[in-house]
Length: 179
Image (tube, rainbow, N blue to C red; front, top):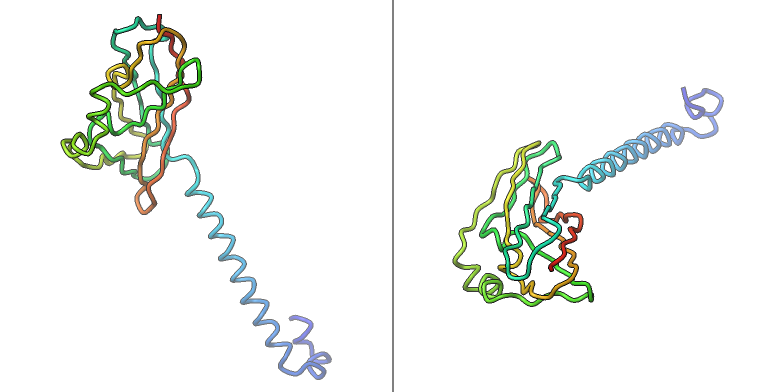
């Protein structure tokens, strides 16, 4: 029994005491809903995909530079991973020792053109929880990796959790040297 329901107080406050109890109850319910909403948001911001990129550390100028990329669904939910052409599915950010990005090769320019994008199939890979996909991209086929020195490569991939919005995952940087 609340203070407002007590006989002595009721005479002073009338039905106001019962109304305040209802107000407090409604406030408590709204607060509980707000807390559960915040919990749901924090779950949606948790990591969903994990991506790793691996490569040999040293390459010779003019030779292929394979970059092995693994994407793993580390969530409890199904994730849709867009697939077109491997070269378009993964965004490579390459920075040389001088802080500059190398130019695209002819193939890189073709792949990034509207025509190159229209030639690729469009589908979504349904990546189940705990499953992974691995691809290999020849970075030197897409970028002019002709200058000797150190490079840092970071890979970014777009994906969409079921019922969620399109978002991106990024790998940790990979360091390579061209001799």
